[in-house]
Image (cartoon, rainbow over all chains, first blue to last red; front, side, top):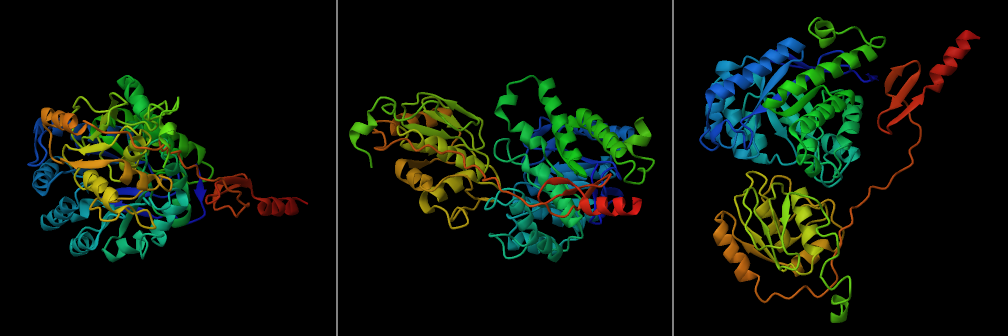
Length: 307
Length: 216
């Protein structure tokens, strides 16, 4: 419900729009498939999995997206280059929209960027992520790829908090010679999505909320986070029933959206059932709150579709 | 270094202070008088016989928690690293590097091959204490629970508590700061604006004065 004086850019990846003023566009919801420990995976290294179960999950995310009006992105996580070959082949057959390529292993991320370039899917790919961990080899590989959309991770462990996160983006702070935004530009990235990096509760998770507003006000770029990580890493909550944990997931997502976020990396794709209604609710409330500040949202918005 | 009498004082004679471990996390606590701690990295295995045993998947906050919980118990003299590495993050490699090399001025763990290996919450002296108090046993890759339990038995023999007080890592609090009223860059309408940097919601006096002037 904020209205930023800074022009808010809108990023378009394969037809899905991220960003703008609060209440202008519906939130983009990104569900992860093939994450570590995902039950549908048979072999994480080789990338074998239960295709029927995977297709059911992807289809369900698409159905909820259509029903609520919140656009969606398929977040592909892979442990190895071989796995990514299989995951991308699967995604190409069942998913029309943009997808995130992600791995904890830099060699796998590089291989995925090369692969999407080779098979003509680079325009749909969002690289996750460019961060303090991105070294020269990865930067070079990205520059040579055709990928031009990326999530920029504003994690700055040498200066925790909002100031440090902005510094790592703008100047590099104490730990980089240049800011990640400029570096991403040099790697050929044109569509930038900012992620504050959500820490565990008690270690500074809440800063992601304040950062989201500050980053939009200062940079005018789309912002979003994986705030579900704050929920899933909370030992106290882990002992509670599933319905309670899911309730906290939905609450955290809605809080992040109220704090100006344009997209959510909402975690396991199975959470689509609770995240899409929660995000649609947040989008409607925010759009109504901003109704005398902003032009009414378009036809596809949950405000027009669900009430 | 403390006198021996300090170590056996009531309250400190156990080598740790209750509640131990001081930092919450995904771990199992055994006998707090035991001398071996076990980090199973990304492997979900729970060998028996350790004072504390748990996973570590991250090369920054996860490593900090291990250091904090280990140095707050003088009985722990051996830290066994086992289980499979968390790909990309490499916390096992990072713990080895921290123990061997420490950190640089920015908090980066020297020599770690992990993705973002930084220490941000440990106070001065904590890393030096970690280096002095414990010996690392590098069995990264080992997932056989029986073999790890044998290691715990073998290394846990004849260990003496570290001859000093438990090192309590108190969470660093970020000092609050006074912020001046800045210029709003976010509008809530009705002349209420927010300075996003200072996180201040304020009435826009300039706009208010303009409005009052035009009304007069």
